[in-house]
Image (cartoon, rainbow over all chains, first blue to last red; front, side):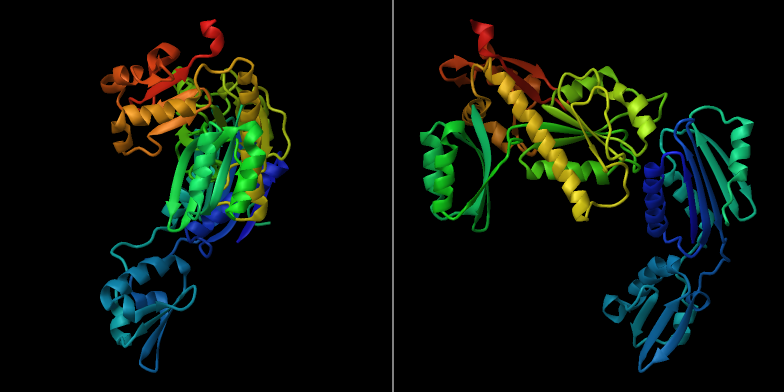
Length: 183
Length: 302
């Protein structure tokens, strides 16, 4: 994940970089977010955050979300994305019990004495994961709370949110548009 | 003037300490027994500190200065949202407690932004019920310098401000500790813990200054003595579920009993041959219905 922070207060900007990194980690968005660009101007005040992310396909079955292989009576489940780990563990624990399910790596789970085919068919959640919802949550967690006038735009896989205390003039919008997220 | 210490040691021979504190006219403010370990918050006259240290060495204990014992500190966050809580406020509060303070965490209704930032009269009164306030503010120098001082510049108690910029002069604050702005995780690095320690150290210094000032016109009765008498004469307070049901403050106490039901009984507590109601102002706290007792200085009676 690339991150660009442009701030007129360099120390404050660095602290916000850290806040964003931690929140991306908390929301398990590391593999879904491709790039983040932030523009901070406390003297205006203006806070712009642009997030480029991949919306994921709707997958619920474990077989679609992970590689499943049998190894000497145990089944090794390697998830493609960390975002599914919580739901997968919860479902496996309730289906097979805590004694038989062990997390052996960041995205790796070992299920003792399970049938790989039934594991492939196991649905880990009722509804699909919405990356957009999580990205919105990320943006809301990051933007300073005092900046309550918001302007949000979605351009394909790019979310742009501007936050200020006063109505946002056009030249600020142009400033936000000029902020590159991919370079 | 009393000097405050935290004693850490074992139960073995601790009666010697209790006897010594009693003999020199000191107070045991809090006593916590954890298995065979003992932690005591003590207050003794300044001139007896050396003898206390000798006794502590004799019983193989440790003694450290803790000027924050007997103080109630407000840790004030700009709001109650997850942007500002729990990490900075709780870390600072925990460190202050380790240095002996009793802390209360508060979130303001509108402590954010540059234009909307303000405190209401009620919020200010609630903060002023404490001996000292620590405001945990954000990361930007421009915001802190130009807009945030209206949160605390009218307060009558000492104020410490914490924020992101490492160095800052901030109007209306008694002190500033940098490097603790808005952060999203527990303070675990040595560097962060050192900054939290700086907040507690500064708080201790400010409280000591206040105590020295008060020593020029001392209180008519020592608050620690009032605490002992309230606990003895109003034993219901010991059954209150609130932590530290009788909380010591620099100039009085907070008694965690309903004001309307207990104000008269608290007023009639006899301390040193005087009715507490005659030597203090007893008011209703804005925090729940607790009772606030502010002891009057000697000059009031001369």
